[in-house]
Length: 384
Image (cartoon, helix red, strand yellow):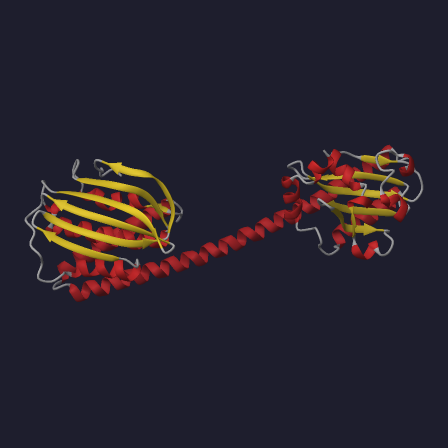
């Protein structure tokens, strides 16, 4: 029972989180032990933190050398361990004749004859150690001694709680600084993406109207992806949800089907993948299956592992649209698609312009964070 309490992982974790074990002595704690020693009239007073195999004195008044310098003893020299295991006050009036501690080596090596210790207990109920006073002669501790030491013990815990609050506040400030830096990075990357798309659109457009229409749609696609990411606080985002969101504006009942495992993507990758889907959907709406009421698109994908990477192979199959003839040259949209897939996603894309409809095979390497249940829908709705 004694060992199970001393070795309780939750208690040891709480003790470790204080950051006090093996730390330097500090005036805030030294004032408490000095005052406890003076007020109770005991030659020794300790703030003792009990680990699984030793006790460390965060503060000590009246200890002899060399313990004054080492500020620790093994549990063989610890009365405070009994305070931890019982969670209550330990009052020893005559150590030599007390069956609880009579075999403790503190009696022999430090001449301790009397001990009074109170638990240092967190709000979660973990006993970190003890605030104690020791006497070199047998002594009957009074009720006032106990009450006074309990008050001092609460002051010790208030000091520890204050330090924890400061630690958490500093951690929160550091996290805030990190989030601000991350936001700046994302804004910078987004602006760079918008700038690149604008420049490419300018080079590919023959007139202002064509440029305006194309760039407006592409920036709207970026904004849509950012909205999804923002709703999830820029955590991992669903591959399926992103694909469905890009296709929803074009969907007619049963006109678009999705089939494949639902993959979780890092937010940075999702922006690029969203643009890939947007270019495929835009091409289909202008020239392919989405430009009439009879057309449909079936999108399916698989996942495999390759050289430590998650590889998604996606088939985009259009049917029911206008008859397809291979283009003499690829337009800006298809060139952008290739640049996104090959340049930013480390993949490859193949286009097969079959009479019944376009078949695009896209392979991309994604830093997928999680794989969930299989997604298999007969269609998507514009409400997604």
